[in-house]
Image (cartoon, rainbow, N blue to C red; front, side, top):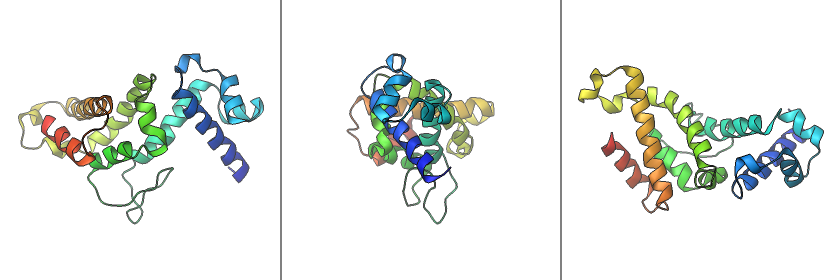
Length: 182
């Protein structure tokens, strides 16, 4: 993708995020996105087949970094920039607390169920690598796919509660709550 194409794609993503924080996904049209992004219809459709595909790609862009466990000299790839060796879940909570790429805005918007759904879907893969969190507990006797779903579900519910209560706790404190809830 050349520089011009990347800029157009970024403009479409940014416009879409702005619209999603203002109104329901079902009420947003491709025409709204095109107008907000100041791009042509052909440009939009050269990047995305539909607004649903745009939503899926947006979630992919947002979550690929968060769930990417490969680090290059402690610095992640993709659209976020961060450093450090925080635990996986503290790392996630920090991104949300910093509202990286309007992630917090999306998770607290009227479209939040869509984003929590995609978030949990991506979290399942990450949770598989975190099964050690349940070591030494009776739940080890449960099927692995149940344990993976348990970790993802608890994290998602803790995140929803944290967002709904206005992020009053620090990322470190909410990570502690998450570990206690497991």
